[in-house]
Length: 355
Image (cartoon, rainbow, N blue to C red; front, side, top):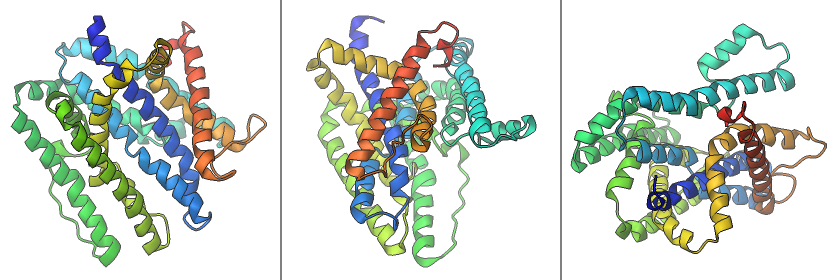
């Protein structure tokens, strides 16, 4: 890759670095946001603000994967060989590590048969579902590359509109109807190829390929509206039902789809501008954070748990004091410790493959 290509991809490094911090921020804020009536409303609002600001971090990761992987042309053999080294080996290693973590701290009687059931059913740990998701997306990538290469812009747009209708709009309408009218009505349209995160995968390619810099101001506007919908919509729904309502937080909620798509566009075109005003040290830090992002995602729940349970002799969590500063402080500490741990692992020859 030449220097120009590296500069063009700095936005992707920036996106990874920001989004993996967002994942940590969401997990830290969860201790407060889910407790509607436990904490003062100012505490809940602080958590709601932070959580809404970084909605849909996993969809953004998926969009970035689609943007970078779908345009490439390589044989299935080469594709899966690279993915095996980058995904399969770390996945197996971290699943085993979290099984050992659970056995040591939470379930001493965990046996081999039950551990296998956990692995098969994706119940080892709350964040490892992403590994199963990305493996599934990679399995269909060679086929979607062929489809994307032959498709015109209008064809991809049609697929995305179908995906939005089937995977987002209909389920959202059903959920709203059930919440307010208790009408258990389900509209069943089985369009399996346009269901789930595959839409985000294709959306990332579409935004990267067809949306130009001229759209950045519209993207900013959509991002602000999406943030407002999540912030105030979640508050009023929770107020109405006297408990935290996460309808507008869901990865497939319409507001989250527009929010994450606009965020993707903003970072892509703001990234080069920010890069020009960064010194060499800060750019290197962002690149290193990007390289460690997968490992940071995988290890951070261990550090979150260790700090929250006081396993290292002290406790650090979002509800220790006012979340307006405790949430970002805790998230920064976890992010930093996770990065340092992965940075060290990457320097050890026999361990670097898992990070």
